[in-house]
Length: 215
Image 1 (cartoon, rainbow, N blue to C red):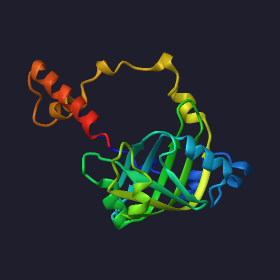
Image 2 (spheres, one colour):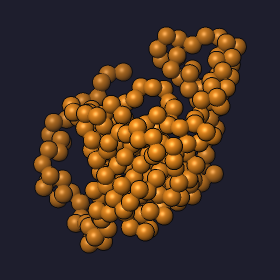
Image 3 (cartoon, rainbow, N blue to C red):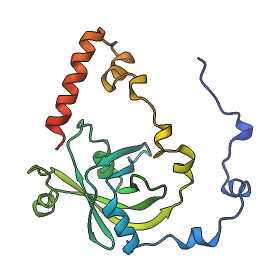
């Protein structure tokens, strides 16, 4: 497969040219942007069991990482400050290392069954404050680090993307078994996967590890 290249004559490099392709945004889209967490935004966050956090390093290399826990896992410290526990993962630490280099982050909160989402932008700081971490413990396990967000922008995002994708509609759910497991996915495209029997053992071990190291 040959690499795709964009025809230079169709590259958009000017903001005004870009805006001329679209109708002007309506007043409500501008009005909805706030710099504090109002009561509705706070309630949305309390209900949310899942978010994605977008980060960048100093060179502009971007990363988006999912974070999830029981609803309300993100602590609302005040109307301009949030705290996210960092649970055990693969220890790549991509988001955390990016925050050390560039504190600007974007959050996207989702609630199962809701088609709208909540977007929060701000500046992040990593902390090991024992009192804060203790308040985020689950099953007696305390996170090693929390991400504290100083909020600069908050707004509700419309439902179009989730409605177009039918994300919550069971009629459009796909069978996970139609694609390889996480580990086979990796091995197939790197060192090569072992036999089907050996893969079953590896996949079973991963499920056991999930149970053992979730927190």
